Length: 537
Image 1 (cartoon, rainbow, N blue to C red):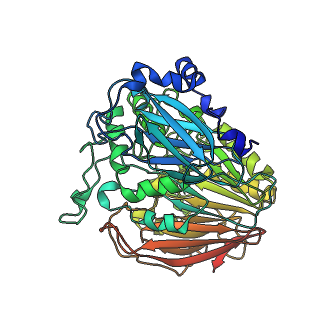
Image 2: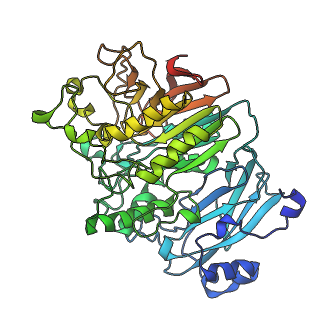
């Protein structure tokens, strides 16, 4: 713990912030401001370098990651954002107040073209459960001022906390209006559950004459190279609502498939490996992730990790893409079983998490010691229907979800039952709809009198799918007694946790085809930590 009086004069990068940095960077940091006088630091971009804003993420009791990416021409087709092909040293500060009268941490971080001129600083020595303000400086240019908040001490008993969860934002299909309301709701943390960008050139071409035709992607083609991916992220980050949500709220992010390739898996083909290398690199460069999470080749370390909020909640952020085996087919009409499954999806050799991550998750669910376990999950976990053949085609295989890996899912469900874990709630992205599902303990058993083992809240898209009617569907059917709710609005989930209950509100915006919107809570649900299953609030 550091006192404000001592921290105000400190010029230091936190211990974690040094991870992954080269010897030249360490030498520059040890010299303080004198190191900023060299040629790399004195060179200046041709315009304002902080066009992509600032962000924070990975809140811990004593640390948080702060991020920016230098780009004077953010949509430059080569992906370098108009920056010269040289290193720059950006100063940074973290303070207890918005005016920066009490600076508690400060330092300098060197960046260059090999990381897309992104800056990732994991600032430690902070106080738990406290609001902080941060900013960057390059020469005489100051970044926007960001706000963030650390997590409570793991032993601290807290009365409540809130989180928002969201997924699936297609830049060309609408303005990101849900974020203007998420900022006003002011959650403690945002869980983004995948499809932050779309590598495909999805856009208003599917909606001739739509008012979002001005939202043009860079590059105007499928992303193939690292430069393409960098330009695509820069396009998305020009959205003002997204920038504000990053500036004012800490995020924890997880990757799905469309950031790299539709239906992504651990494909050993050399072309697929090279695509993952470029996609993971660009993803890390543009997210508030730590230096230690910088990709190594075609892998990204630390993709599954935990956040803890006192004794109230443990968030298990998983990676269902990087380690999965080849997805078996989910549509096989001649071979379909009576329950609608293809035989291949029942193969116990198929894995969605990989052995290491699965063991990590099971152990963490049993040992968290918190009132709530929350699983941050990219793709549909709970089986849709007792007879999969009854589902409409668009719902047969939501996002290549856990229905393709039935054995892995059953391992988790069996573990919940064996260890009497009743406090798990799953929050999921990908489907472009809101769903509330009570998860049965066994995919072969659909007895509505048997209590569920957990509840899954799937969240709709920010914009993906384009403007549409909400189309709410409330009534469970005979073959879906566990399916409590569904709608196809656009928006996000907002959850408030207390020791007694979890309340989840589905927040729906009035439009994504205008730069601003109104918002309504269209459905609310409550779960209790000792009794799996959701009920209407």
